[in-house]
Image 1 (cartoon, helix red, strand yellow):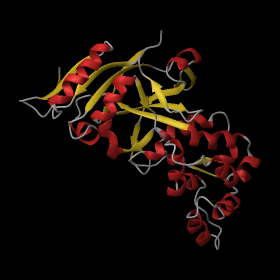
Image 2 (cartoon, one colour):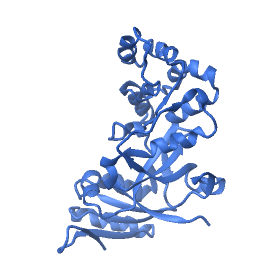
Image 3 (tube, helix red, strand yellow):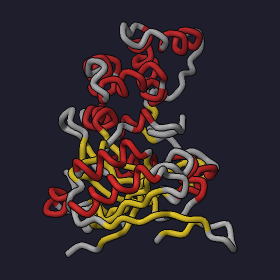
Image 4 (cartoon, helix red, strand yellow):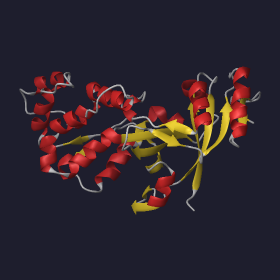
Length: 296
């Protein structure tokens, strides 16, 4: 049996009630997150000029030309990962995963075709950046800021989950779910802590992508600015094969905690849903001696 860990998800009451009722939770693409540095894919190539030439002629990412054309007069280009991080590309990927637009994969393949020809593993890596899903969690259900920022200013709900920990060590402590455990967690790849830093991860050479590159990429997307350290974040990472981006949490959901400012009209339907599914129902309250949330 794999080790397990208790983690929490702060949510508004409408979405949390839907999770408790339907035992499923949406797995977003990180291009939709509130941190503009998130989904930090940082790589470069020796053929940046060819990649950026393709990007400057993009029909669905027109604003990429505003970046590439001023640079055409000098032999300097930003790392080609900037294409994936550009607002045009991020929006197209986010719209696709929200069923509001077409899959941008074909256009991204056209832009990065010179890189694919140089290293065929690069295609697998680029496509993974489109398919990735990420569930953001925390170890702390009593964080005043988290209740304020993610749970309707304490009017929402914090959900408690018990997930298995990755149990297949593939290299120097980098662990993934083995095949048996992976099937129980919606084909998730790994569950790991976020590291906080004042410096961005260094870009790696996309010309030399190997099977180890996924480990480097995963570490990049598990690094955030120190400004976010209060979140004490863990991330459950997925490679989404279909447009359905929901994880069945019937096995993992253990408790629902109503916020200190939650309406009394919320308590009864939430408790009823919890009782029907053998999930604990708790309420948050304010400690009268120290600045701290109590849960009981």
